[in-house]
Amino acid sequence: MTASPPERSVTGAGRLSRLGLLAAAAVAAYVFESLLPSPVPWGRIGLSNVFVITALFAFGAKDALLVNLIRVIAGNFLMGFMFSPAFVFSLAGSTSALAVMALLRWRLVPPLSVVGVSCLGAVTNNVVQVIVFTLLFSAAGVARGLMGGFILLGTGVGFFTGLVAMAILSKVRLETARPVD
Image 1 (tube, rainbow, N blue to C red):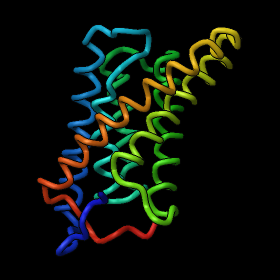
Image 2: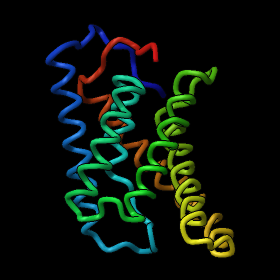
Image 3: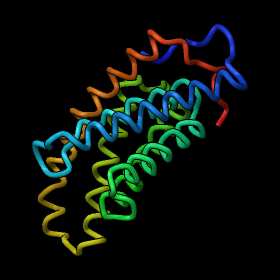
């Protein structure tokens, strides 16, 4: 199920305030999740991605990219990870995932649901992070061993974050006119 078309367009200060709330929520979720113990290395739920997906479906790819960049930069800065491998993994994975999700959202006919787009975005994020890990640490053998698990993890996490984003989109009036980007 995709987000329903909006009744009226939100522009100006209303749009900016909604994007600011999504960015702040994404940073808060990122920091909160960074403080939780991880069941597997790099295995996180991706709560902050809920707000990027919400921005993508409500406002479009450009605004979702802004929310994503604020989340990655501010979240890593607040956690003391700025310019560390964790920052590089986060930036590369989330930006490539957003690009894939945006293409799937507006270029695929028939379009995928919020959950479908989220699942493929999460898998993209994980695959790119494993590739970046391999490039940074010359660990191709380790990467091959991790790839299957991270694809499976991405699918499950993407399903969960997609459901949450879909619930937000159905309950909260965030929508603008369908973006052209």
